[in-house]
Image (cartoon, rainbow, N blue to C red; front, top):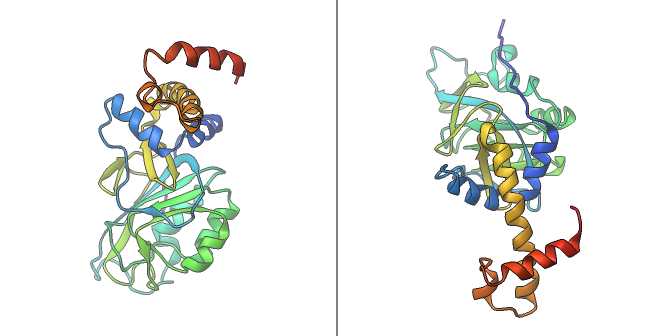
Amino acid sequence: MVETHDIVRPPAELSAALAAIGSATASAELSRMGIRSAFIQGPVSVTPGVRVAGPALTLQFLPKREDLYPVDEYAEPEKQLHRHVMYHTQPGDMIVVDARGDMRSGVFGEMMLTYFKGRGGAGVVIDGCLRDIGQAKQLGLGLWIRGATPNFHTQTDIVPTAVNVPVACGGTLVEPGDIVVADDDGAVVVPIKLAPTLLAVAQEHAEWEEFSRIRLAEGGDMRLYYPLSDEARPEYERWRAEQGPA
């Protein structure tokens, strides 16, 4: 019998607030906090306009060796770990898959993604491919992938080997339960211990950017407003006070 561990989830409110911040601000502020690159390079959005954040359920693939793993897509399904990562799904979860950048294996297809959506899953980030991509795009999930393939998950070169362990997705370390922020710019990993601090600094950043955006749209001097200069800060503080409590 296969047994896999669940993750510890942060408050849903924290994930929702980070989703509002977006991946670009999250990446920039994490860099200033000492995390040089939290960006998962490779997977790109195929669901434009979708912006989500949630705790990471992780799935690891390794190279396939035929004497250790059956070829048949449906052979002994309960031993296939790509199913077990989905069994842990709770509302708002993200699945992050280290599929080794493989472009020939479809990690999930429409049926499994339908199950994931039905359980309340928010999105998947895969350093590899999906299949049934046309149907998958219609499910309302966020999908960040390298591409599409008609092949099933173990048809060619890789096999799933572990659930909810640290993985390297797109060369970036993802710990189970880290918060993944993903939108049109890509996916960023927020270390769970840094998430509250990141949110605090990112919200202040978002506020002055909103003020600066207004001034730039009015023809204001970019040297004053982007980034916000000391000279323009008193004007920003007055504007902020006029907005009232968030």
